[in-house]
Length: 299
Ligand SMILES: [Zn+2]
Image 1: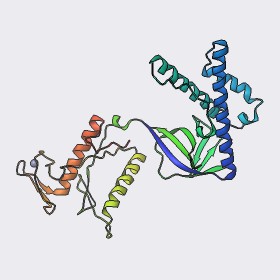
Image 2: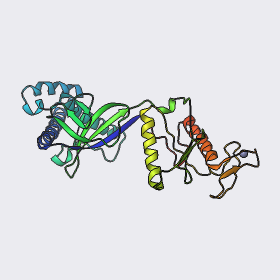
Image 3: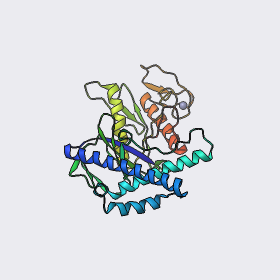
Image 4: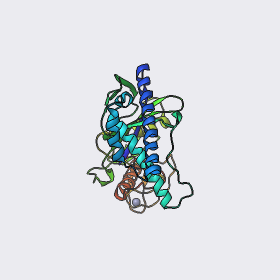
């Protein structure tokens, strides 16, 4: 499963100048490689491949100081993007699409990102180290990264802010067979009640609505780091439905005990709800899908 993490970058002046120059070098490379493809086709009927152009790049790097100042894999990625762009063009031609979308030459505002597809980057705490860029770039890492980082892209937006986007790969957690599972009901009387009978109360100050969202995010990120799965489920009816037999047992908010006349279960209403939530969550894992409109499997 692929996940993308986008963080704001705060390059210093020197780093920003180097990044801007890198973008521009890559843009020139794109335009040059596109012209080369166009030219080879129009004058000689030859179709250039990625490999052809990568070989030319190695040759050109020797005498071009701009190309030499950019990490090789970043340049290869430019050629790969161009290849992809042509692949898409030829596919649309085959499909007889109305808009064929022949790859375009890029003006300075139309080229805004570069990619380190494998190597040449390292996140060191809150510093991003990039090959061919001086020092570490200050990075606002606002959430933990889970899984192995595969690619690193640098992007400049229209307001001249810089971002890094990491993509990570994780094994699909729906393949896991959970050994232990716990349902958690978030409520008003207690902050949380778990299906194994633990009660967690609010701190004295009440920040209920805010704290639910926080608690969920905190739990999800903790679980991810521990290799666990959190399944969020739609809690609709979990306070009314009997967790043992499925019977709907209507109760008002003030009714604190679940008393099922069908199967005889008598337990605290929140505990009953958390057990029902556990069942819903397990169903979600079993079918690898969220159980409802608002349930979601965050990983
Ligand atoms: Zn029952």
